[in-house]
Image 1 (cartoon, rainbow, N blue to C red):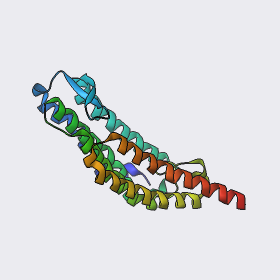
Image 2 (image 1 turned 135 degrees about the vertical axis):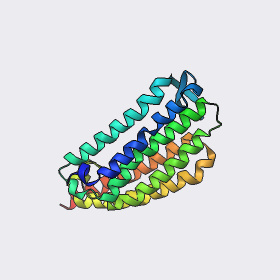
Image 3 (image 1 turned 45 degrees about the horizontal axis):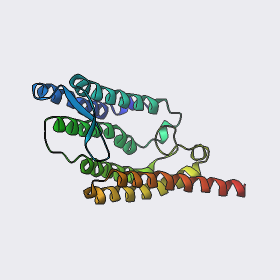
Image 4 (image 1 turned 180 degrees about the vertical axis):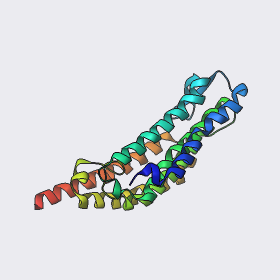
Length: 215
């Protein structure tokens, strides 16, 4: 299976969407200030700035390069036949969504549009994590996508157990992000993410140790 040939239409479209912020930046060029916000603190206020050219050109180009790298890694994966086409579809659209979100926040804030950064980030991340959670149980053992721990890569049963559990945890975590987005609190977001990471990891390790003892 060659992902480039099999999904060339979707890949091309996703890359075009990822690069759309460049076109938007050129259209808005004269309205944008010389310095644009590229980083926001826990309070949702801009605390990092860059030149106009960097924000307009570098960020989308960097993201599309990351997308190309991810697809190449999938193509080189010895177990790429296990990568479900739906999981692949989710992966190639995450980066375009990130690119558009970054552009909206960066350009909008720079032009004085009132944007609630923390609310928007928690809402979008919640939707993304919820969707990923629904697809994690369908993720078969591979070296590119999924929860790649030494014991999940070594044992297919552990992999399946971990991803079934992680699917539930990430779906609940994504829903929690959406429901708490009105709090506009970056620390709440961080706490939810930590739970989403730690629960499947610890459970997976305990599964590994339990089965190692039985062996």
